[in-house]
Amino acid sequence: MCHFGPTGSAFYYLTKASHCVPFPDGTRGVLYYHVDLALPPISGSLRFCLCDELEGFELGSDLQVRPGQPWSISLCRLVRTQSNQPICNMLLSDGLINQRLVTAVQGLSLGPHLRDNNLIYDLQQPVIVSLHQQKLNRLLVTSQSCSMVEFCQLFHDHGLGRDPFQGNISSARLMSPLF
Image (cartoon, rainbow, N blue to C red; front, side, top):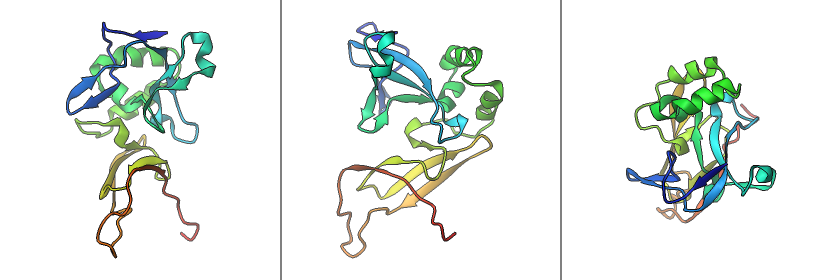
């Protein structure tokens, strides 16, 4: 069970412009390791389930950064950040991850400024997109490599010469059956 109060914590709710925003005071819940079964094991992440007691975990809900986006720390960031090594060791000893997966993450060229909200693990994976964005950059991560994927002018109306939409949506790229 985790309880965040005025004494602070090793985890932060958000990081904005190099400023760490702590979890809201009184936040109670359970840190847990999550892997989406539709994605590869490298997509695992640490999440926070809001609940008052461990017994209430099943009835709890994930802490959201914004609607549709749960707070999480990716396996990639867990493995590559020195201060997270005790958590990685615990995940290894509990059998939630294995050494082969850790070694694969360590071998990736993820860059020094890894941002979890920019990672995708499958081209068809849904992502939250701001409708007025001119570009959408995501780092496609597999256990063998990582590559920057850039989508340009997704919702731009060339006839109007502007972006006619506002807000955020959950978007997924679907492969055409024609290819």
